[in-house]
Every structure is written in structure tokens, then in C-alpha cells.
Figure (cartoon, rainbow, N blue to C red):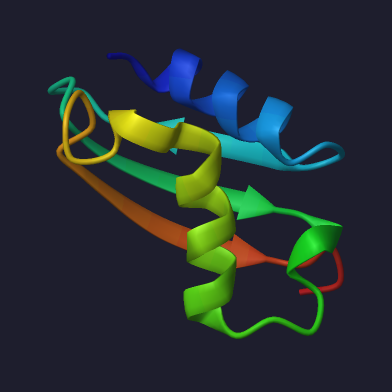
Length: 74
């Protein structure tokens, strides 16, 4: 797994979002995701939206994903 693939999956799964993903070891990643879809949602709900874009990769090919989720205004 690589950071670019994760970025593409997140942006495809959350249309209009912008994601920056880093992770040099191929299993531990950090992502900052900016999306209007996060507006009015608590952090846990925001994270679930991102995890849903990655499906079965979470806990498998992606061992850990540290998230920072923001609305465009934030």
C-alpha cells in the first residue's frame, strides 16, 4: 500500500475533498482530509466517513491511519 493510493481512495470516496497522506513504511499512515462533508460532525463521525472510503484495507493493508479531519473553513 502507498500514500498516493490512499489519497486517491479518500478523494474518490468523499467527492470534493482534498487529502494529503504520508507514510514511508507502507503500513502506518497519517492523513489530513479537508471536506465539506465534515461540517457539523463530531471527530468520530468524520473519521468513520474516511474509514468507509478505505473499506477492508483498514486493519489489513493499512495497519494504522492517523487522521486530521477539517472542514474548508477550519
